[in-house]
Structure formats: structure tokens, C-alpha cells
Amino acid sequence: MDQCKYNVVFEAFAERHFMKSFAKKHKSNWTKTRDNIGFMCGRIDNMLESQRADLIATSSDGCYRLVKLDFAIFGIKESPKRSGNRCILCVDDRLKLVRVLLVYAKTDLPAKNETQEWKKLVRNEYDDVKGWFGL
Image (cartoon, rainbow, N blue to C red; front, side, top):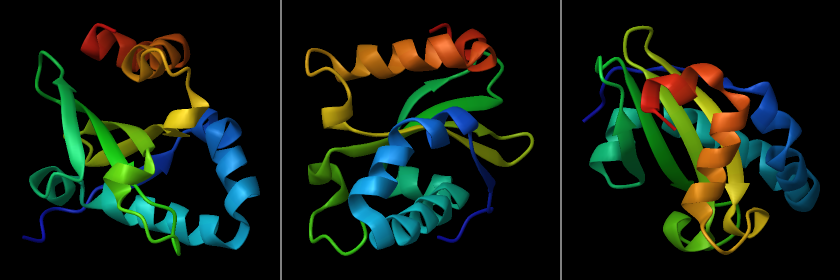
């Protein structure tokens, strides 16, 4: 099941926003959690097969995929799905690169419509991604 490994980049917007609050709230567990997110993203095809990640969209040229990945905080006994913690990823299959666009808890976004809120953030912060997926 070990498929081709991808390089992983945490985007500056993701680092500056919700990741900052995760680091503050979870202190020493955050470093291990962040490392685990990087590990999972590096094997994103495995995560998609195991249903830890959901394919949201594929670009019209088939080179890019938009993916939502569930994760749990290290050391807290809670399933990734139940935790409400999510990453929004842009997978570049040509460069074998996963860009971590957003890392958030469901409570970080207005409760009304989580999907619309993260799409709005991606649309406002990532012009290239917006164009590939028509957000």
C-alpha cells in the first residue's frame, strides 16, 4: 500500500492563522501533531484510500486535486473524524507536492456552513487554487 511519497509545504497563511491557535492550545502535542500531518500528507494517496481524506475536486487538466484531511491532536484519545480538526490540501500530481492551505478546527469557522467558509478563505488567499477548482 505504500505509494509514491509527496513533498509537503505548509503555506504561510495556514501557519499564521489557525495553526497558531493550535500551537498555543496544545503546546508540546502540537509539534508531534504537525509532524504527523506532514507524514500523512506525504502519503496522501494512502490517506484517500483509507478514507482519512476526502477528494473534494480535481482540476480540469487532472494535475491538481483539492483534498480535505481529518486529523486528531497527538495524545488525545479521539478519532480524527470525530475531533473536528481538518486540513485543506492542494495536491500537485506533476510536482509530487502537497500544499497545506488551511489547518482548522470546526469551531474556528462559523457553524452555519463549514464548507462555504473554508472555500471562501481559499478563494481569498490562493488565486492559483481558486482558478484550478473554480472556487
